Image 1 (cartoon, rainbow, N blue to C red):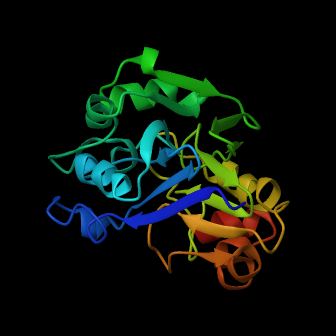
Image 2: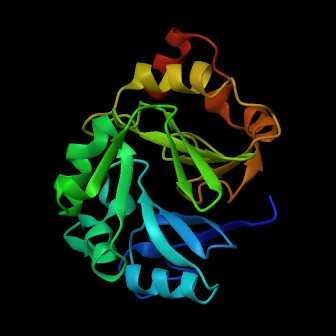
Length: 234
């Protein structure tokens, strides 16, 4: 798609170098947009949001919407380890827009980020969000949190904290569910073609790889039965 705009930005490196813990947390933030209209969606906007918006503006892109994979503050803003992380609340002051997440995550996103529920659109799996002529599909991927979602655009899968190149998201935090994570990895994501490019929510094992490569190298995707999975996850 010639008009597709896509950016992968590493917090603490590509932007937000002055934000506490940003480099340590190694969050990826993404932007997907339409070059013809100059509009983009920002995915998991957190850390130095003003700087993030300015970075996208240097590409002549304007933020007109936000997508959130899940409600944890390093992905949507809020308080973490006694520090405040800029996120959706700051984004809406400089780029007023709607925030899109799974309907099960709507309350958590509002509570953690501090934005009004009226600014959030709750979705079902399979819903699509458009920006210009570009379409992004939402895929429910519970396990890390009940409403965790991945975003698919063309051959790219933005997997949030569900799937990293090495490992998967934690299931021992509030809302985590080990068995749901197993089902997500072995049934929901197993349907994706091998040439799908995985773009994770953190730089754990690298910034991107095809699903074929991730299946071969990520131990979490090589476990076939629930008993072994339970033992592996402790």
